[in-house]
Amino acid sequence: EMDEGAAQATDAQLADAKAKAEALLKEWESGAATEESFSELAMANSADTNSAVNGGLISNISATSNYVETFRDWATDSSRKAGDTGIVESVYGYHIMYYVADDEPVWKLTADSALRSADYAAWKEEVSAGYETIPGFGLKFIEG
Image (cartoon, rainbow, N blue to C red):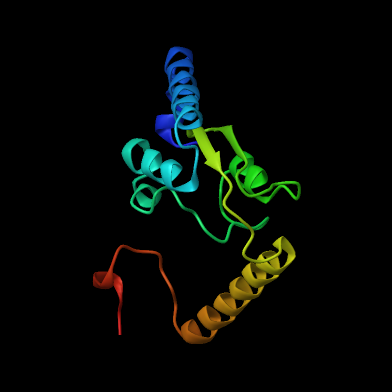
């Protein structure tokens, strides 16, 4: 699913974004080219404000994670090794990627994600049993 910003990007804007991503990756490669220098580059340049504050770090990505497919596929590629870099295109633009490491095998992350989802679904069903739920925005919609 595309967001409006991604849907409205022109070919020129996409070309500019790709050129900027390539230039930033080249800048990193010509410098210290370490995890720390990548983190600094991400903090200074990332449009993803959620991960930029952590130096661009996104943890626990598995095959079932809710990320754009091209992004998720790059991160979970079984041939990926620590220190791998690349530029991944998605509907949101271009992502400069730096692979840190596998803390856990992909199968374990995938199983953990599936079990957590199942546990959450069971909990949600249990706590909402006997109540009619209506999607809303905040507590003002809860009726006792």
